[in-house]
Length: 85
Image (tube, rainbow, N blue to C red):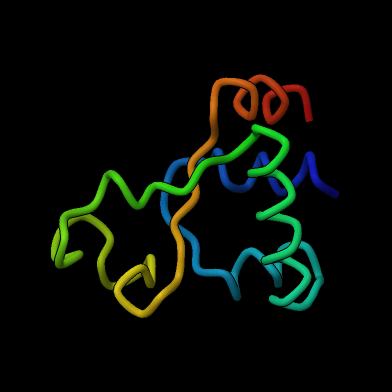
């Protein structure tokens, strides 16, 4: 299931947590644990540094950073693992 999550995160576009959770048929609370675990293992990183201080650009209406959420991107390690899924 982690490989599928990496593949979903790596697909172009932005997905809300509820969309990712629905695609995996899991609760959002479990999704958050999985995302944090993948980040600890070096497959993902939070993309907070890519957004401006007011989160007004790119995906502000989707990512939820302004509301305390996170936007995740694949690391090189995650991209390699996601393509093999």
